[in-house]
Image: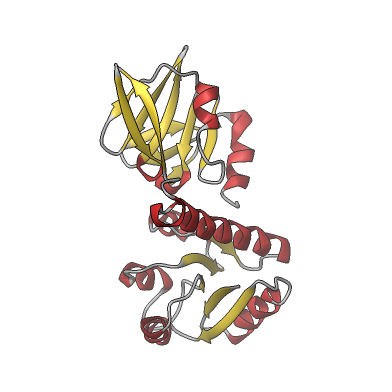
Amino acid sequence: MYNCLIVDDEPIARDIIKNFCTHLPFLHIVADCGNALDAKKYLEQQPVDILFLDIHMPILDGIGFLKTMKQKPQVIFTTAYKEYAVNAFDLAACDYLVKPFPLERFIIAVDKAVEKIKTANTSSPENNGGSDHFFIKADGKIYKLLFNEILFAEAMGNYTKVVTTSATIIPNISFSSFEELLPAMRFARVHRSFIINTEMITHIEGNLVYLQKNKIPIGNNYKEGFLKHLGL
């Protein structure tokens, strides 16, 4: 069971999300709020797993509210405005639903949030002894690679270049073999020569995906599958 909070200044919009949630028995709506300040008070007392968040609201909008949060649940934006998607993903939002959205699109977003929650739970060392990393040989050394520090991997002939938040290594392993070491729900192939960590995405513009200061091309044959992976 996953606890959910709905934050939207429109009662009809809150009712639609409540109705959609009834189709997914593993979702439990703990509260719904008409503004961000009421939601903030609630979250200070009771954390939740999934937050359904509108953007245009009185006093404090959804983007500003998310910026104030120290401990963030999985956030699914529900808004009538497309233009804030980049800002939302810059803040590591789980998904971005543009009203009016159908039930099937809602389910995709929720499934994505649940997958991220499960990944966070199972990848922590205290839960299963270290599934948040793996070891790999490169340059006569053995490196410990943490999944949450890998930015992207690039094919280089019979080798693979791995770029992390702190280093670049080139292990003697094929690109396809390296891809098999990565959890599919966290990493995505965006090009025949690139795999990226979707949790490191800052924004997407045209056929480029940005991970911190790195620009990675999105291949035409991979774009549709990549956007579906993101729930778009």
